Length: 458
Image 1 (cartoon, rainbow, N blue to C red):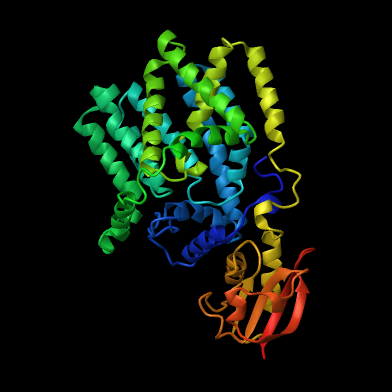
Image 2 (image 1 turned 90 degrees about the vertical axis):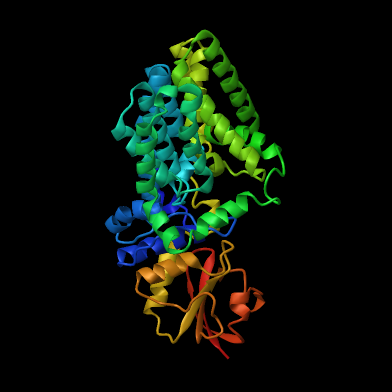
């Protein structure tokens, strides 16, 4: 399901194009210590995802489908760890059920089709959780160091993933005082520093610029504690998206089921209490972060807890069915049929692509490459991306260098992707108007919906 028609169903928008450009520059020897900018606050994420994507782009020779393949591979790699955690939490049935639900989840399949900076956090949060359950059972300096490195990685993917660090730092004081030792915190610290090293090198070179911006943002009076509603509503929303084909009502029911199952498990020992306490406290930390944030929460803001929801729901289903395998198989079949409607396997192209897929940008870039031209720039009226970042990436892949998107007035020629039912002269976008009075030199068909115009200055 993740690789099926991946060239047609993969997401390649401005964000993916910008990230692909950074990895392409690394393939050409220009390595970076900064990742993509955050959507708020003016600070940057770390570059670790670029480094993880690097071998995939090398194998695919820069083709941007490498980003979707990268996400799919990490999504598949998550499944065995979900099974192992479920087996620890209760038994093999819970592990297999949670793995199955993750495999058929519409949101997880959608995530696997797009190269997005925060999405590998699903794999790393699951790995961290597995290693932590191992450490709770039996202390290991090797495992805690690896866990620390994974935490250093995940903290570069989204700023709210810091919750997983807060969790492992504070859990021993409440539930496992035997872990309170120099060895535990020392090896954890070493691992985190190793994982964060590219980001920390940049911070050391630039007077801790991003760290200061992050602190300023989180302690801004305008951002903290604005509303309690998002911190509560995000959970049934995510439950609905990962398990119930986007149904908020079923997400509410699933959330209530998890709460009831967790309470029963503590009272009647339906699950391992020492492992279940890890999930409960982890949830409290993530939930508290949502309260502190106070603003609108998107599903990927609590991405570190996504796989925990699969595990806790599987435990709830097992608990309330009293381990009845036939009933569990029946519910699994119902969820399979329900979720299959949201896999979008028959879609011609993702809605987000607005009628333009990777091959269309490759075709347009090839036309521009072969076309005789002077100093030129590119733009498009699609996807809300007037800078035409996906087209710019394919041009870069072909060795072409259009003018920067800050400068359109200095170009002699302008290549414009626009719908067939639109006319260039009717556009009001800055990229077109700043080019100046123009005339049509030539046009080509990109696909059934779009044309590529070559405009010259009057």
